[in-house]
Length: 95
Image (cartoon, rainbow, N blue to C red; front, side, top):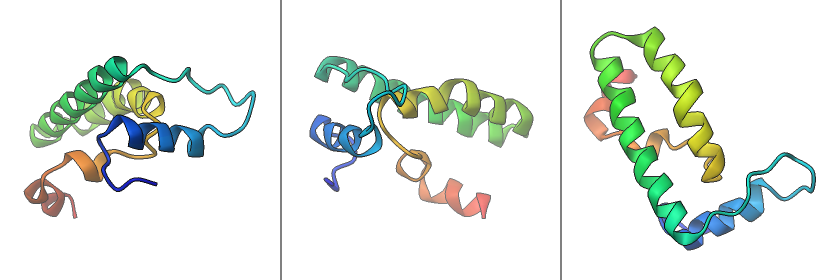
């Protein structure tokens, strides 16, 4: 698998790995343009998630993650984008 997380090629490799079974309710393969749009949305969604946490709105953050981020991660064949979008300072505060 490619180590360049945000490229379309890395997405295609992840898709083949995570959605390898027929009939697994997999999403259709995104076009390169759709991938870049959804990837940008995911990055922005993690910013919103981080802001909710910083404001002490953990319940809202959990709901946002479940309703927005999880769907985007599935479309992008990302098991968990958390480590790829949160800055080091924020990660330390969560530990």
